[in-house]
Length: 164
Image (cartoon, rainbow, N blue to C red; front, side):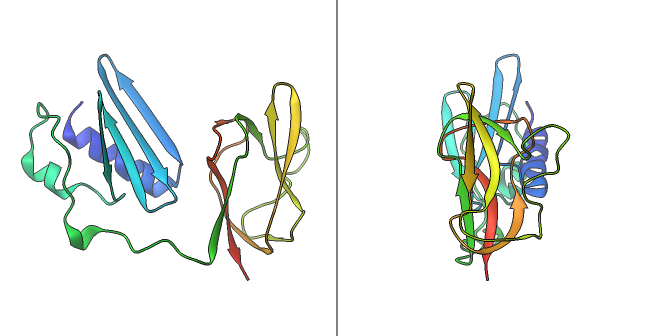
C-alpha cells in the first residue's frame, strides 16, 4: 500500500466521521480508528502509530511507500482539543446496531433532534437479545457515528450529543 493510498484513507475517515476503517490488501493491512475524535490509531502490520486525523504531511514529503516508519505530523496541523459540550454515547456491549425498532419503522432519533435522559436512541442486538440504548443527558443529536446493521464493539461511539 502506498503512502498516497494511506493518506486517502485517513482523509476518508476524517471527512465521513466513521469510527473505524480497516483495509487489507495481501499482506498489507491498515486500520484507522478514531478515538474520541481527537486522534487516530494507524496500524501497519505489527506497528501502531497514533496521529491526529489531519492529513499526514511528513509522510507525503518522504514519498517512500517501502518504509513502514512511523508517521510524523507537523504541530500546526494538529486538531483542537475535544469539545466539552459534546458527549459521546458509547456502546455498552458488543453487538449489531439498529437505528429503528423494525426495518420498516422510522429511526428512534435523527441528527438535529433534541433528546431527553431516558429517551431510546437505538438498539444493540447481542446474542439474540435487543438492548435499548438510552440518552443519559439532554441535548441535540449532532452525529450518528455508525450505520444501521453495522457491528459495534464495546465502548465504540454511537452518537455525539451536544448539551444545551
